Every structure is written in structure tokens, then in C-alpha cells.
Length: 226
Length: 216
Image 1: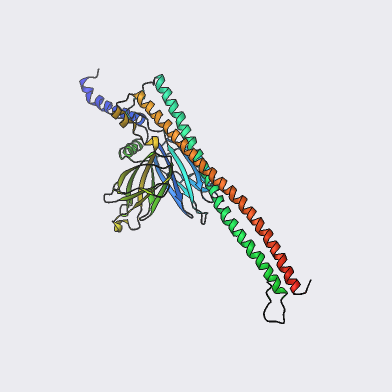
Image 2: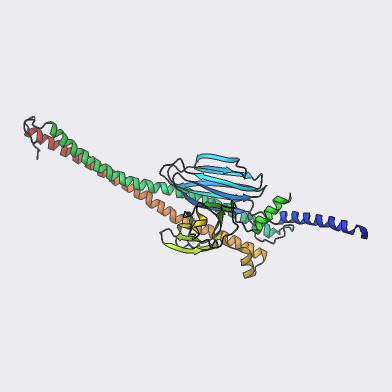
């Protein structure tokens, strides 16, 4: 029991510890601005597009990207930390996944570049996962244990999330295959018609050229056979 | 120790949505969402303008507008609206396929904007992620377990819709492949026939030419 004389010092100490406890509580209970951003965008030729995100130190992040349509289906990707240090750099990649833990607070930047391509524009999909997904109940008291039903629900939820993730990847690969098939279809059409025309023109041209070799040099007009 | 914590709390308080990018004055940025039908998409954005004097982005700029245009897979415009500097747009797809969401600013304050750039925070949630569960729980008065079950039901529904869409896409892919197959087949036959016919014509024509020239 503190004596009256000590009350102000004790109160000050209590105040300090109270603030620290509050800070600790905030850090534990309030999740980081977590979540995932899944975006598909078009990258024109000779272009570079950058995205930024403010990340708190210690958060586990994953960047996954895939090129869906365009050219050789590859793109340059580069991920930098707030100090400009390059964490990940790959040239001409079709698909990759990179996980890292944020070593410092600040703005992380990742860029996709199509500068090596002269006329094909690409469609790029990326999924940037920062931290954990926000919980279902914002005011959830994490200290209490989940019942068996609730833990079953949580594990089913996680399993379904991975099913949806696989479905997304499958859809992207299928889109890639379908885009190639449609390209092939149009190319076959144009080249077939083109080749048939060239064939006709060359055959008829050959005959007339050959006839011109045997033409009478004395006469000015060449006799064109029936 | 305090500064990162304060920054973190400030970030949460400011409601900073995760991802952002920079956009030029009249630049149009388009995003593609390939979704099955009857799927809801919610997009949230927030813009900040670059202030040349302060060399920083202003926290919020009134009077700055963003035009949002959404097109369905057939190219028809589903949504075309002007929102303020901070806005939220929603649409539901009625045909499965690639929907295009385009954003561009039409700021009237060109003087301030000259040579500047705009920072756009964007967050697009599709299908099950678009649901606001605390709101649903409050509206339908669900217990925790019922809410979890509802979330699982929504997820499974999304998976089913995606699979239906997959079947539709696979059919399109199959039609394209069969069309390519048919084209290759018929055009190869046609080219062979043309080759044979022109060969025969060439020989007959030259023969009659040489006979007329009395060379054979």
C-alpha cells in the first residue's frame, strides 16, 4: 500500500506503464493494415508501371505475379525496400512468387517493366499479400480459445481460400492458353489465304516470264499464247 | 520505439488503404477483372495531389474528381460516373468474362496540377471478399458460429460460380481449337488442289506455246 507521500511518483510510474501496456495491447490486438491486393492490368509496350505500399516492420509479405497475354508472356519485375535496396529483381519472367519479411517501416515499391518489348503490350496479374487477412470479428478477443466448431470453421475457411487461390491460377493459365489458341486461329486464317494467293500469282507469273524468254527478238511485240 | 508505433497508429487512423500508384494528369489507368456472372465487385479509391511547394502529397484535396468507367466483356458500358477525390464504386456482373475498370482524373485545377502527379490508393474486392461480415452479422443478428458458416457458404458459392465460368471458357477454347483444326484441314486441301491445277495449266499452256513456236 503506497504511502501518501509516494502517491505522485507511483501515479506517474503507473501512468507510464499504463501507456506502455496500452501500446502493447494495441500492437497485439489491432492487426496491421493487412490484406491482399489482386490486380490485373495492361502494360503497354516500352512502359513501366510501379505500385507502392506502406508496410510495417516485421510483416510477412508475398508478391506473386503472372503474365497472361502478350508476346512471349514475360515481364521484368523489381521490388525495392524504403531505402531503395533491391530485394527482388528478375528479367523476363513469366510467373514467380516472392516472400519476404519487411525489415523496416516505410514504403515498399514494386515495378513491372515491358521496356524490352517494342510493340507487344502485356496483361499482367499480381497478388500482393501483406500480413494476415483481417479477422472476421474486429472486436474479437483473441485471448479466448476457439471452440471445436469454430476451429473447424477456421480450418475449412483456410482450405477454401487455397481452393480459390488454385482456381485463380488455373484460370490465368487457361486464359494464357486460350489467348495463344485464338492467336493461332487468326494467324492460320491469314497465312492460308496469303499463301494461296502467292501460289496463284507465282505460278501464273512464272509461265508468262518463261514465255517472254522465248519471245521473238525481231518483232517488237511479244506474242502472247492463247 | 514510439515513432514507428505512432506512424502505425496514424496509418490505421488515416484509413490508408494498402496499395497505391501514381497517375499523370490526363492519364487513364485500366484494370481488368475476369469474373463469373452475378458477382459483386466493390472498388474503393482515395486520391492525393502532389503539392510542389511543400514537396509532399496533400492529405486530401477537395474538388479533385475521378471518372470511373466499367465495361463488360462485350464492350458495353456498365458504369460511368464521376466521383469525388475519395469514392467507392460498386457493380455486379451480368455476363461472365473480362470486365474493364478504367480510372482517369478530370481535374479542373490544371494550374496546380501542371507537371504534377496524382497518388491514387486503390482497393478492389471481388465476390466473397466484398462482403462486410460485421455488417451482415448486425443486420441478420447472427451468432459467431452462424457468421462463420455464412462466410463458408459464400466462399463455396464463389467456387461454384468460378467452376461454371470455367466450363463456359473451356467450351470457347474447344470451339477455337476446333475452328483452327478445320481451317488447317480445308486450307491445306485447297492449297494442294491449287498447286496441282496450276501445275497442269502451266504444262499445257507451255506445251501449246512451244508447239506454236515450232520448238517441239
